[in-house]
Length: 443
Image 1: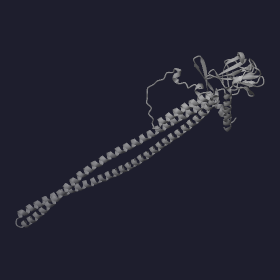
Image 2: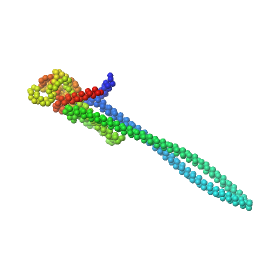
Image 3: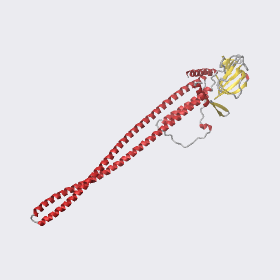
Image 4: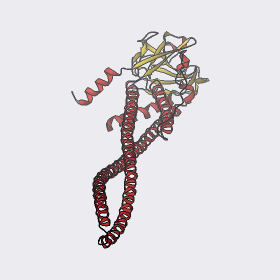
């Protein structure tokens, strides 16, 4: 079994044709949802959910990472400010110590001047020593006192020197801390620049993603519009108006279901998110319309009632074959051999099967949305009222019952109980089935 066959069977198993019955007043309409339409809707839903989850997760990851980087930078700035405060305090203390050293230096200068004065006085006393022994003793006593003062001054100078050395060590420690703080500040600034670069790249990737989304939605919209135009042209070939034969999609309120909840305004994370949502909703409406057209085309009688026939009488004005008078022919007569199989020209429900006056044995099929087909003058009816038939379902055999002159099938197409030309539907069917064969051959 080929991969294509396995895939086709898998789609048929998971997405069987579904039919929805819609009751309106006393009539029941049938809405058919094909497997490919279901598959298309499922794929669109999966892609939308995957994209939403991926973008939301990635945005959350970027927000968390940026918050961590900002917290680290805040801590670094706080440490830097604390170190600056400590350095300021150390500078203040250094200024106080320097001021003390200047005071001490002035004291030393003053004491040096006093020492000079004392030496002068010692010399004076020495010169007078020869004059008076008593003065000599006094001068010796004064010298001893001066020596004591000099020793005390020397001790004070040694203490000041030790304090200067301690201040120098503390200043070197402050300079080391300042160097480390400056390095940490430079590293923090580099990390900040890296984070800004990563944030810019993330924003660019988000912008690129929005561009791709726009292009994708534009391609989908163009494809849907082209297909809608082609399907509507097929309906125009039959003479039908689109609004007459397509039932608009049912809204949730139409089924009486309750809706509600608190109002939360939509706030897009990106300026283009709201625009994308609006475009997606518009494309969704087009896809709904396209699905309705596809379903309508499938249920429009575009098939041929028989495989082999010839047109023996057209739709419209003609001379009656029995009395020769001018009359209106409400359908077409398709002639062929007796008992030629007659097929349903579209899916639908049999609403009449049996004898119907001048039609003879007749079958009437309802295709929904006001479309019906009639097959008259049949030899034998093979279906009964209430049966559900598909395109090309065998429903009867060609005959000549009722008001007939020979073997043929009288084929009518009714739109809201008004007969229209069936040949337009058959010709439109030739166009549709030919395109389907070409598409299948390309695949």
